[in-house]
Length: 124
Image (cartoon, rainbow, N blue to C red; front, top):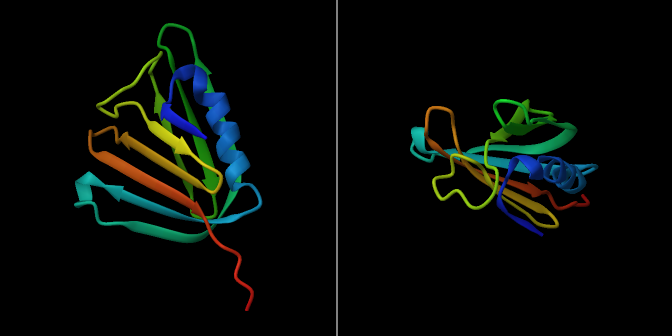
């Protein structure tokens, strides 16, 4: 299990773990946004197409990742070098066997919470 504020150096590991959890599975993506009164946005039957990341260690140190799926693209970036960011300006990510939780802020400052959960296979 991975559970911490994501640092610039963590991005490759986090991208790999997200890919491991999502690859070959359908999942539900639930997003809530402080700016919209925490009204949930839900997308079912999502499939991961690609996970990519970038890192910059030059003048501005930052990194991020994107996930392309059947709905669109979602992702986050970080400037955190080390430690915990209680403000969530940098994402806090928990990755378990079949679930990913991400708490971070939108560029405009609103708090965002995302839950990505692998769907159970149901035989008809």
